[in-house]
Length: 359
Ligand SMILES: *Cc1c(COP(=O)(O)O)cnc(C)c1O
Image (cartoon, rainbow, N blue to C red):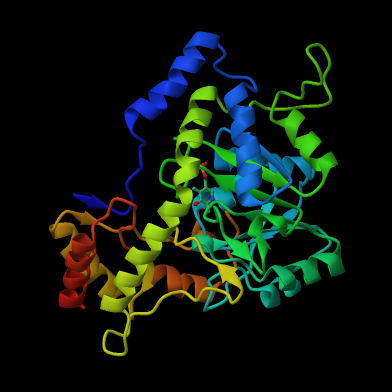
């Protein structure tokens, strides 16, 4: 069986060596030494100044929305994982959907402005599949209308844009370290802030609002990550550059077999200036009917691609409807083929030949 992704697990002895240290100290959570070590190593690897390791990528989004005290309208993308939208609703805000760019599939700045009302407070955009948004275009509109900009960068581990980390754009960015992501801590995530003040605020929001053992700065929640999660991150971080190289090679192999004028299959565009991380292998079919035919043929051989991202989030049952024709169209005919470090070239060749046969 081949799934869309497979969690990379380090050699057991390596993880066990961390467990022995944790057992010896008895310190399993609450800002332990492995959490602090991982935070320091992540800041250095990613090239960011302020980062807090939290227990998942969804709570990272909630912390960002909470820290900006948002309660009105948030303009967002319909083309992302459901957590981008559900966290807006969960925090008591109203998602307003602007359509995406047809090439990069990220929130289109030109579609944002006409949706701005007196209730608009922020923009929450996703660097989908690790492709950076038009961060300059989005910032220009945000500055003009005094809006906060939050990026869901769950797919962006290691992505750089115009010479710096993509996490350095906007007011806040979030990462997910879920087991299905490029870099993982089983469950986990991070909030990247741009200022020391914001970073400090995140640090108390994620720890019940504690300011010392007996004082509270305000209302908070528990978003702390454990030493066991940090240990997994410490095992994997030194391997991430290799992960990205391997995924690049597999992606290029898929491209060479599938993407040409005969198949008419196309790939999302990677924005110019991007140092890409190859976090997924999305491919766009000519129609939903063709996609379903390919999916059925792959499933019959125990191969399970995923329809990331379907349905378009503007069709969720708990949001107001907005017209997002590009997102609706792309969602209906885009699919991610299996891509993970341990996938063999021969498996990519087999998957590609099944795709070609069923076009
Ligand atoms: C995975 C993902 C999330 C959620 O992260 P979790 O760590 O699973 O909570 C949010 N947004 C996007 C775009 C994701 O892909």
